[in-house]
Image 1 (cartoon, one colour):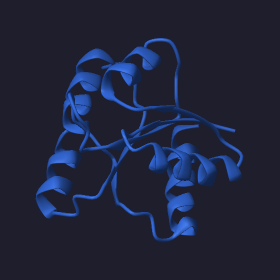
Image 2: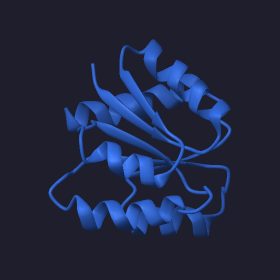
Image 3: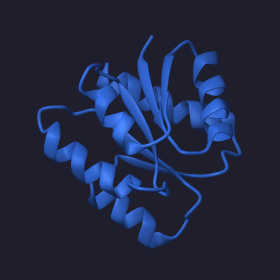
Image 4: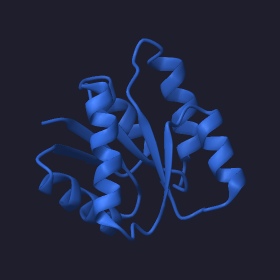
Amino acid sequence: MAKILLIDDDEDMLRLIKSIVECSGHQVSMTNGVKPALKLLSKENFSLIFLDLQMPEFTGHDFLSLYSAIHQDKNTPIVVLSSDKSEDAYNKAIAAGARDFIAKPISNKVSFLRVVEKYVEANG
């Protein structure tokens, strides 16, 4: 069982992803923004982080920059979940340190869970 963090300002999306991930036996924590996520990450370790890019106040890109500056010693994989399916959004996220990029809405739960297991196994 891995600990997975979800960061998204959309409560419905958080609940959906949580239900999918918990069905595979993993523990899930959720935050609705960058500040609470960074606070949680200062106290707990996670095997995988899912991150939305488009959030108010601080964006997912802000999180990627702050996380890499604060937690240089951690190698936790970050997978972006975004409704922005543009090549530019993908390239910026990967360049900023994200390991993978999944377009929202999640249309295939099995494929999504394969991504979860890929990074949990690699980081476990």
